[in-house]
Image 1 (tube, rainbow, N blue to C red):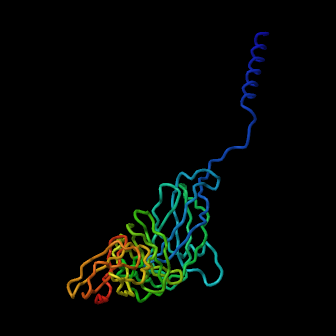
Image 2: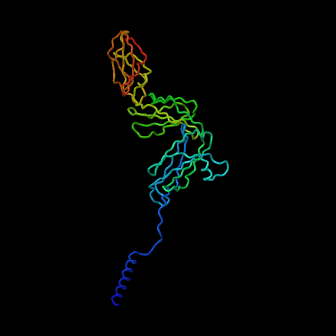
Image 3: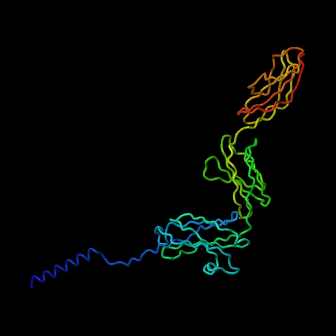
Length: 329
């Protein structure tokens, strides 16, 4: 009998020890909902014959956990009501747009044809479903006024000119344009300018660099598709201006020449050409940095004519100036 009591007492102590090790009983844990957080950055812009819709699926659920599974995406577009607005009523009549489900949260881009929405003020919104079919809250509601598509700029050309690279294109139906430029192997172009004319000269080019240009028509918030030029490498193929103001006078055993100085930033030198007694012009001097020259290889009684040209750092030579003449006394 005594042994039985000892066994029971030991069993009680053992159970108490186990319970003490387990700690106190807390609130029951419920399974995570895995419900996507609300999208807040939805935007839409009409570009060409499509509406470009973009948004970002947040990486966390409403419970602050990583969003691991995307079950569905419900993107809808439709005209807004004439009075009042109630999300569920709008969604019931708005057109559902098919969206491929991405493998993970992040940026999503969708292009929708404008043909069903031209002339309407359209509301766009999106929400994300989990693998159980539960949907997040609607995103921000974005309103876009859809117009007839703007035509894409045509016949885009990029040609070298002394000032840089001149762009020309045709599109009489658009009154405003954005000009974009990509330099070399850059991944994305950057906006260079806006213009209300179908031409633009890029004066910020550098010789030896390759440029690609893009032109887009714009009307209010509506955009055309983008026209792209062929890449063009800027090269110095343009000579300096022809020297002006050439004047000559007879000196003591010499003929003195002077002319106006060239103002080009890449100017290198002047060259002087001479004709004797109506013979052909022959170069008699080069490498002149200043606009003056003294010809000492002259003889009394002979008739001399002179011309001058300017040369830049790339070796481009201007045409020769109009001749001036003198008979050496």
